[in-house]
Amino acid sequence: MWPEPPDPPRVRYEGAMTTGQAMRYVTTTGSRLLDALTGSPRLNLGVPHGLAVDAAVFAFADSGSGTVHVIEKEKRRYRAIAAVGDTALACPVGLAADGRGGLFVADSALARVFRMSSEGVLREEIQEKFVRPAGLVYDAARGQLHVVDSGAHAVFTFGQAEGGWHLLRRLGERGEGPGTFNFPTHAAVDAEGHLYVADSLNHRLQRFDAAGKLLGAFGQAGDGTGDFAKAKGVAVDSEGHVYVADSLYDVVQIFDRDGRFLLSFGGSGRDGGALWLPTGLFIDAADRIYVADSGNARVQVYQYLRQTP
Image (tube, helix red, strand yellow):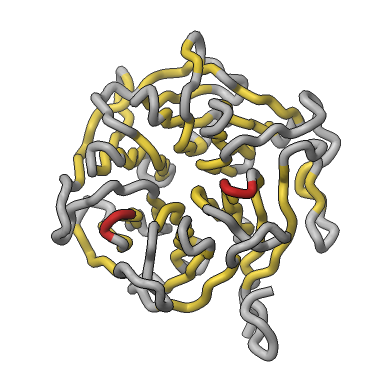
């Protein structure tokens, strides 16, 4: 639990999915999240990275093995997808659920972004000259796909129209000033469409409104509370709190939307709940927190505990 007593708990460790484990996940509180799945009986994880969860699928990208692991919830079926259509995956990093049972996948080595079915069937490809696409965010309420291109030091926003996806805007270029980026990696959107971008080597998080206007930034290089060494995964819970995984400090820090530090959890280690080189981060509709614990080759799950009056 975090924080430690006597403060009331706000984050509870639930469990993990690890290499060699049967495709079954039972939380520490007894809630069966995944069980009785058909398909491959055991999980083989290399370097888990991007995560995507919605009502239809639970998926995570494995950049170490060139695989996207997909669980279809209703069918309770597991698949390890190594190719999208006829294209073999090389380094899948970013994932986003498309709201229709499929997934967007960003492959950094191929410099391509695909939309595929949960079975790996190619639906379409986002037509853009990416450099090294990493994080993906699909804003279903606005029908927009955000692609964080680490190599281009930019975020591309696409909208869907007849004939496919078209570019709405590009945010940023390489720099240190407001609205510029230095190897951004991940992003998240909140209920209002605000876009939070992990500007990793500028050691900050930048926030934009739904139209792409810069609203502000928080964070700096350092080893103190609220500082970043290498900010990566970003997520937002149902109350608007912003979570940032720091892959060098092995923690997830929680802030309010204005950047005020609230809490951190994790910490370096291999025991349950501890982290080593965390990267991807996702929060589902039930405020369950998924962390790609890359150095430990596992996906860990926590629960945000809302406080009742």
